[in-house]
Image: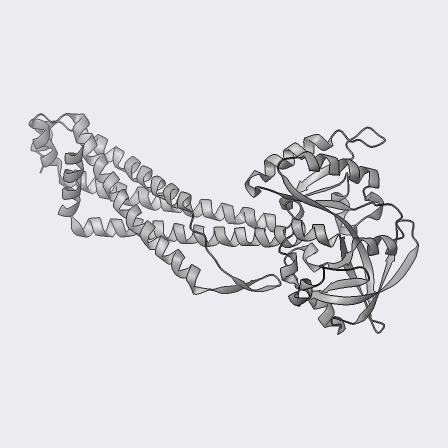
Length: 417
């Protein structure tokens, strides 16, 4: 086998220009795929992390039908205190759940006594919310207040930065919230603006934050009902398994019609960014297909030319007793070596490019989020997968020319002009 690799390398070096040009095509394809895959994949992972760690959590449970009407934030579809207790019992026992937190979602009118605007409100239990969404405090403009105080205290409100700018409101100002409860009555309460919060992509990225007890007072809710339960899993890679397990377990709780009372949804079902993430995955697959095509065409062309130019040589070694299988192997190994060289050099250049981007601290903006830093991750598994694809493609491309060479009749090959 070692001698076959030596012969293959020697034959490739006989036509240096052609070998170099073909290798450069493979190197370019591998490098571009690795750069695109690394950058696009890291962008996707970063955005998913921002969305799940600062707004949505990994998984949410709602009363049946709530998500279908989520834009209206229907208070009549809140979970009862009994329902919350039942779900808490399931979540406490699930080994895949790291933490969970209750929320109340509502729409309200925000007034600074001079002008009024509508806002979305997410009412939270601060001690639990910062566990399921650990990046939420990082969105606060004044993070120093967290040293001595929770995310939001009773009597306080955290409002979105752009809403505050539009209304001329700043931390320390007094505002009034006016909301309609599920019975149709209107109530208003004064609050102090404790902090401002940066926007992120998605509808829930523009929510103001209240303490959950203040929301119950504003809506005149006597019981401990909630709109949703936000869940953080221990291993994000096992999110689908945990979701399936929880969905199965909560089916035991039914409504008056005997149908499931609750439903679980992952972040992907709740965020429009999931569609962008799917498009990124599709583009990565498309680029890989293009790379495979480049490798196949390049290696096939080189090997066909090699067979055509070495017909008499093939006839000579066949006449000397070399078996068709060995002739086939010689040309297949040539294609394999060509792919190996391209994959090795391309992987090295791709790694260098990703490292350069990683340490260049390149910033970009997405939706309403500014100064995001691009931090490409270097996935060894992805590097190995690309290398294997190139090696398989180059070997397959060499098969047809190699088969043709192995089937040549020695007499006809020796007489070839």
